[in-house]
Length: 238
Image 1 (tube, rainbow, N blue to C red):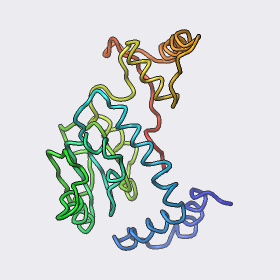
Image 2 (image 1 turned 90 degrees about the horizontal axis):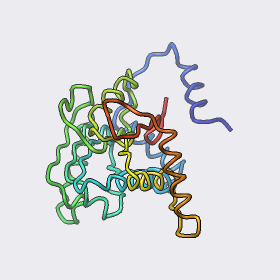
Image 3 (image 1 turned 90 degrees about the vertical axis):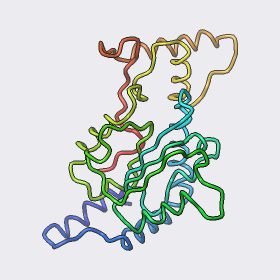
């Protein structure tokens, strides 16, 4: 059974010299719907995207108010599937979506006429019918930046992502304070489990901290912090 990447390469090989055009909104929406059905609702959202996004937002425990930039959310907003307790922490939401049709549905989603607001603590929201460029949100910072379906059709993806990383706060996930409590919390998150109290609890906890400090790097510009490389945020697609 071939992988999706192998299928993509085979399809492109056939049409290398053929004229082409970008998908329109209807074609893209139909394809995305088929992909979601084929991979299964549980796999596409509930067993990967939502749990990973929930852990990411939950890890920002030092921030009571969270700002989100969503780039190319498409026809459906993924934040609406988060647990209510996490949605309440989102106070700023900005979306850049090149499809005018999709921006209309997103605007309606943010301000429903009857149902409860999906982001109840929202203080500022903006849905712009525009593609994302390095100049789109110049001078602004966001706690969470989501590339949803937006990498489709983008040129120089690596450069765009590198520029976007500069929009994150000065204390990103890749740099943690060199503090026992902070390291304990971070180690639990990375290991995906916490140590239980027991005879060797303190010894193992200390070992975790030692491992974190030994594997982490240092940066003279960030004294008192451990630097950790984050080569993939959620998933990398080429």
